[in-house]
Image (cartoon, rainbow, N blue to C red; front, side):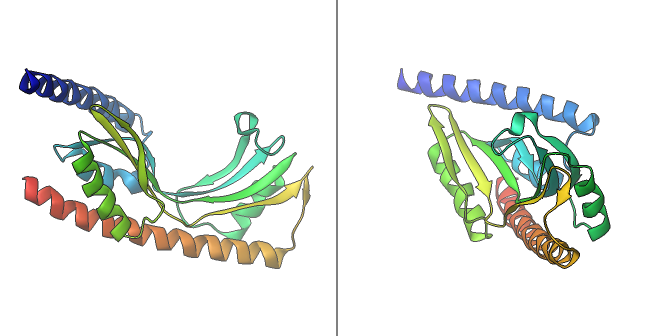
Length: 204
């Protein structure tokens, strides 16, 4: 009976993975998947014990907020999955009418595992590759969610009511450090891809 229960759980997990990957393919065709993170997602989804949900390779954004915490009403004035230039950041800031925020988000990859052992395995790999903020987010009977996350982050107000709160030198420095951090976590993604490929070949 226990064997039948385990088989039923496994079958349910496989069906769910197939459904999620079908939606993933649709999003890919619509151009909704971040190209930089696509090789990583393909490697994870190719493994038998995992599939991915909402993920991002990291980004630099200029966000126009009505007030702190009201992200539902926020407007993106600039959004880049790459390093940025000072002038494009300044142009985005100039469009902010309320609270303009300069934000660097690190990569975030959500991995669903079929059991705790496999969840711990991919978590260990991620941490060794430099994703120190990674952890297990939730545990259910047949669905363990691992969040792969890094520590590089910048979040600072840069304008208010259309008035830029910093001089050019500060903005140049902010862009410089954001780009450095962006390159740093892209290198972590490359390391993760290598380790995932090694895991992938084991299961091949």
